[in-house]
Amino acid sequence: MLLFTPGPTPVPEAVRMAMAGPTIHHRTPEFEAIFKEARTRLMRLFGMDECVVLASSGTGAMEACVTNLARKKVLTVNAGKFGERFGKIVQAFGLEHVELKYPWDTPADVEDVKAALADDPDIDAFCIQVSESAGGLRHPVEEIAKAIKGLNPDIMVIADGITAVGVEPIDTTYIDALIAGSQKALMLPPGMAMIGLSDAAVARIGEGRGYYFNLASEIAKQRKNTTAYTAPTTLIIGLNKVLEMVEAKGYDRFYRETRARALATRAALEAVGCVLYPKTPALSMSAVYDEEANMVRDILKNEYDVNIAGGQDHLKGKLFRINQMGLIPPYESAWVVNAVEWAYDKMDRRPYDGTAARVFNEIYQANLS
Image 1 (cartoon, rainbow, N blue to C red):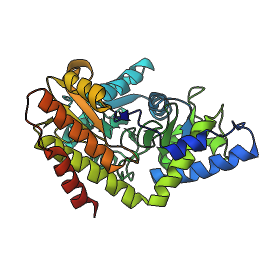
Image 2: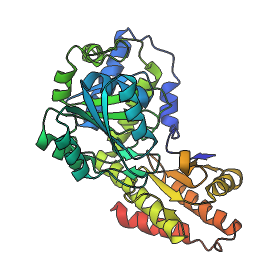
Image 3: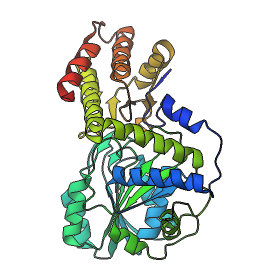
């Protein structure tokens, strides 16, 4: 079965083998050496001043960023399930909250953000997704972050990059916290979150807040190549291996291949009549609006051994999403779009003629060089 959901993603064999060794105690020089190597590589991935690793899902990292970086009032963007989640976290901790809400296919507007900040000088933190995976949407995060810092450099910009880090180069010049998750582009099992931090964010954190998600205590420990609490040792070993593989390929080529797969997948799907959902699609996945999405997914799973994701909430049964994150062989992506075309044939949508695979290969090769 090909796993093409936008998280969890498949774990490469070399990574599984790296994680299959004997368990290492986390308070030993042996593990500290591994953690130091993984942390150094992670800093290169983020391209930021500091980073921390947490034994949690990405939601834990979202909570850690809100509790450690926001002090009074938070502006959030809600254009999907995970933007909504940022707002719920803010409210759960009793912080004042302002929300910009958009349809799930519509990116945030920089002018809306600027207007909200002009109306409320008490806002000291801003939260947004880079890629809102509920609808496969890419927000113009870099542009918005730059505008925010131009208005008030003290506002903390928190970006959920869980389905963006490791997918494309992200300009972090004006971002204070960038969140990643193990089970997305890094192709690891779920259970670990990572946060890239700016120097300004580290200063704002100060002594930190909370207990388990106190980022100050984690930064202090992780700078010494250990963790404040029990480390997810196996996942960190896997992370080290994944990043070793990516660096061996080279980040430029890694990102170029992901972009080529994404553009080829989109073109192939559109060529067989699929309607892409978001106005600004993310490179991490292709989200297709289809009133018979469940039937498409069932045919792919039961007849072509391809597992893709559906929609959530009001898009349940009306959306299917195909992953493009990670070290994916292009022939696997070609098989997925080919299977979608076969599904449409079986549903009497259009006769199968090999268009999807042909278009995928043409567009992939054209964008690879």
